[in-house]
Image (tube, rainbow, N blue to C red):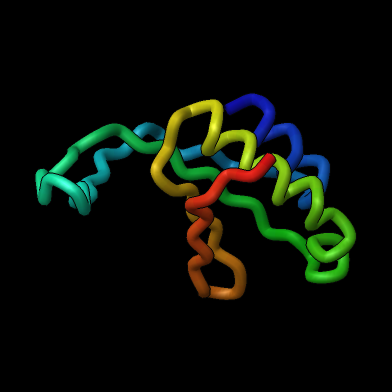
Length: 89
């Protein structure tokens, strides 16, 4: 989580991590409801800076998803969610 906070603070000038919250998702294979703790991190980033650092942000999302063995990692940009499911890095 330190890596996420550090990159977003560097790119956006600051980042905020929420206390762990409870999230739920439906396993598509077993249809079982999975309940787990999640952490959200917010950072408000200028569009130009976001574009300039997109490769770093992408690498972070893919690396985090792979390292934490996640089924997906989500990023919200301009009130739109982008789901990363295939971690290629």
